[in-house]
Amino acid sequence: MNAGVANAYDAGEASFFIEKLSGKADLVYRFGFALTLSEPGASDIVMAAYKACLTDINKMHNEDSLMLTLRFLRGAWLFFSEGDKSLQPNLQNQEHWLTQLPVECRGAITLVDVIGLSAKEAAMVLGKDEMECREFLSKARQSMIKAENQ
Image 1 (cartoon, rainbow, N blue to C red):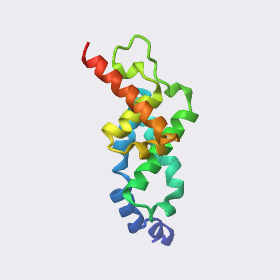
Image 2 (image 1 turned 120 degrees about the vertical axis):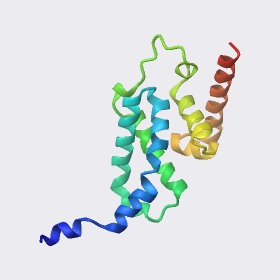
Image 3 (image 1 turned 45 degrees about the horizontal axis):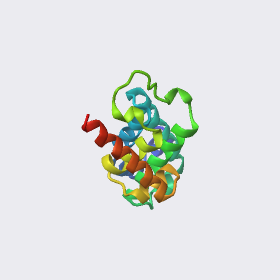
């Protein structure tokens, strides 16, 4: 038996990944969908966020669940905002109220109202200050209320 193969599997690492990290994929996917308004775009963002974040897996062992969530969501935001422009949504001829919002507003409302972060935590993900994030939230919520009343 090849000893190198036996050492390649680390039960502790596998358990850490399954218990602590795999559950973040759904949150990152929801955030990615809000950013790209597409399922393929959201999937690409999940893959990129995990790829980027897993380079620091040794640091993640000491982080609590919230910090891990923020790490993955921040990675998703950075990939989207600095990455491939093909991920930018095509908003022509779309009627949904989300399509009328700037991406920061879509991101903020998803982080707070869907994922459940505080405005301060959402601001950390978006790389903005808390007041700016609250302005994004306000604009998004106003747009939602306006759409519901039409």
